[in-house]
Length: 257
Image (cartoon, rainbow, N blue to C red; front, side):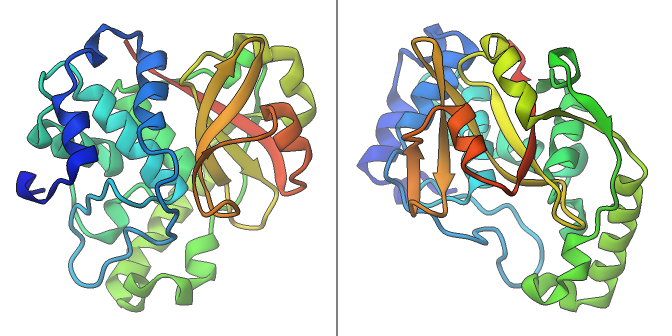
């Protein structure tokens, strides 16, 4: 990322000198709010050619929004914020083991993303401690819908994704059933990562964002395809879940101090 390309809003983020004084969850929300109204764009990482680190702070899908904000939070100890530290942290978060080794090394499935970032000691998966139940399901959405992912036209990339999916299908992940969330909502903190599990065949998680507390209620700060931008949900989290029949449950991860 070339610092000459930053617009004025991006420069304000890099030059801010107060971010490191915030608690991790509050820092996440303050950074996320910087991008309110930024356009939503699907497939922001599906660039042609060899897999490489793609960075944009101008438009997001739900996952790149979460990744970018977490990477900024991890870089906040550097004042002013360092573009180099940000890019290194983003790469570390986005790829398995923090290394780019082709298309399949990107953490495409969000349960894999959480699991790998727990292993890298960036996050804690607190879903089970909140009453989440273990779930195992066949993961195959990407290879089942190969035409949606241009990179999978390459036979080698396709076969590697099959291997990744096979491995994920053998692993268990915890999910809080939608109907049980209200009982544990008080334990969810500002800035926690919220991921929405789904019953859709072959898929683990269909959307993600951040828990944003306003009084006793929790809202969702996220890049919304429906709203077409980064927004704060108009409904509290429990009502948001209830209004979306595709959501079967919730996973919760917390950035480490």
